[in-house]
Length: 77
Image (cartoon, rainbow, N blue to C red; front, side, top):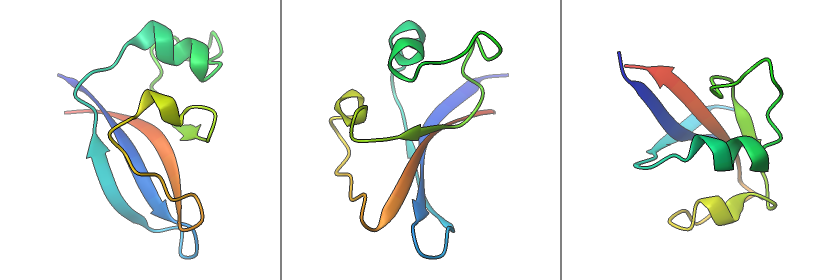
């Protein structure tokens, strides 16, 4: 099974999932540091909210925090 990492985009008003942006690269150590991951999730399988403090990790995304909420997601394919 493969691990797929993506950005899950939710509408701020309805809280519905409106988009999934796949990540082509993922440096686990960098992301663990930047998202302050605790020791109980060493492989970052949980969902982590993307904020203005972490948008630089995703230069290919045009974030609109007024309309959407963004989360770093993970699932097995």
